Length: 461
Image (cartoon, rainbow, N blue to C red; front, side, top):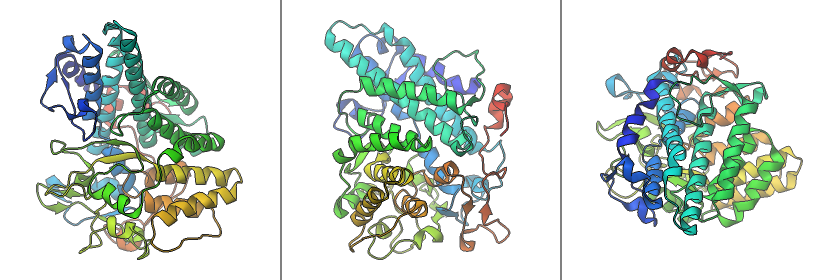
């Protein structure tokens, strides 16, 4: 692995920064400037938990959110997104190359998180276990780390791995379970990748027998991850089983609750989220707007905006009131910088996963019921769809999960083209369609990583 990825080692061996999250869990309310020396980190279960909480502090799933939107048809480039303050321009226009800075930052950030996780797992034997309660607490923390490791790897796979639609021989990113600096892991088959992924999910599910705050990776978050992974693998029976296990525990938000979720960071229907505060330079609403310069970076795509009816609560929540081109989904707390948490798993996604899985297994009536339940929850009108197909479910995913990091990955997993309306193109010369299988469709492993580790360049992509 690239040595740049492991510059985190020096940091982790000297300090662990405790993250701040808006949670009832007191560990997530500690001063973000408080550092814990590595010698102290393993002296007790409590201090080890500080290290686990520190993993969340620098895990930026916003990279997936951004890529999922700018590569597809969710947003369009602002004319202000230029020069030194501009970013993701070439990715949006499908003219990027493997040395794109954003791709490299994404790769580094996720593998930094994995290095932290693996360091903690490799050293947890140093933590004294003086009581049965200590043993149980440490097992739960190990499950939390294994769940996070599976989650981060799956994000890397969604971004840099080949489409699951290509079958079991498709290649994807390395699944890293240790901190050996001398290893040069190469691409691996999806079959091998998923074997390791499910092993971590299973351990997490077995150990996480508690209910944790939504800002911590819980047993329910593990089930939600398992449902998402099952959908990508096209294991529809398994996707139905996992969604059905937890879907009733997280009722869809009412109209008022749904508005509060985006405007006030309320947690109705949220299974797992990454909490954000004013110290986080990268957070959901900074992806579309630069608060330092006052420049808009991306607008909402007209193609998306036009899908919502006046009775749809999302039409007033996701877009600006004075300017419908503005992306306003992450309105956040009521102050200048609109601090917004990042929802990662929500019950609405589970409904959509189950609806798709029901449809694929021939349970059309059940699929229709799940789709209607979600549509009715988001509308003040009476919604009674009488038919359902894959296009309808994909359209509802487009509307419900907009700007949450799904659109490009949904099209990719299903082998569908990326299509934009002409009014959403950055320039008249830009292409309105990128066919599945085109060279620019598949995001490459960053060039700097391949130069450091040639094994990552093996295979076709």
